[in-house]
Figure 1 (cartoon, rainbow, N blue to C red):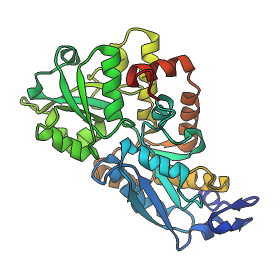
Figure 2 (cartoon, rainbow, N blue to C red):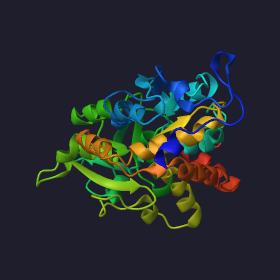
Figure 3 (cartoon, one colour):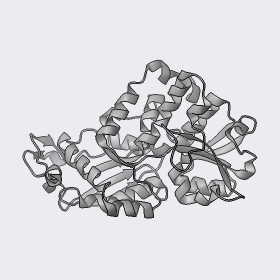
Figure 4 (cartoon, rainbow, N blue to C red):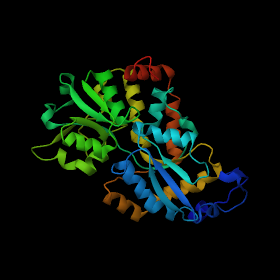
Length: 346
């Protein structure tokens, strides 16, 4: 059964790079002795980089034809530079995949004029894991609870306006009255964590897996280096159940709807998409391969060695979430856009 799913034949014809047409050609012939490139919009050291290398090591083994897989990094604008490239330039042969930023949907809703892609035209293959964005600050900042942020300014680092590192603090400032000063321009979670360690910034909003895998010791012991203050997601993340959810800090339904929009990052997580224009005939076998590898014991063991989680969702599940989010009522989207970026920004 698994073999029949993976070695699916292509019905009909589809245009590929170089103008080739595929009729009943076996999918393995497309990938045999070829290289598939995974494009990542962040540096190599963080959870995006580690997840892409994890997939690069294992995914080719279950794609028909067993292609070689390489990872290409294109940091910039919180992952949006790579996303725009994938939408507008990336070859559509099926040999190029994108690991999209977790804020891919929220960024499009909030900045429709700045973001150069249509999120509904990407095809999700699946995700390896999702995580809650968690705001943490140095213990010597004088802030121990989220309420302390309302009376004291804290400098936080960010990779760009399309990243949770910007959007979460900006949302908190707008909806809760916190005084987070956001400094953009950092590349990757490891560089931001180093900046925090050296005192260049006092805090960051990063996925909890990035915190736990790289700096878990910061949050333990009597003399903690940092305190986790609040988390953004659809529900509490394992290991930080006592850290308040953003939604618990909000009172009215409109504010909670804005928070839920940004919390979508926890669902989208670290996964892969096909760019627009790629043959629909590739979707079923590539989704089947992705689902198969995320259940593989060797893959899971390797993920944990790299400090990563494995709590997968299928491409269909994520596609539904994306469709639902892009159908959010315009008044909610407009309000979110206004409070985070200002009414004249888009």
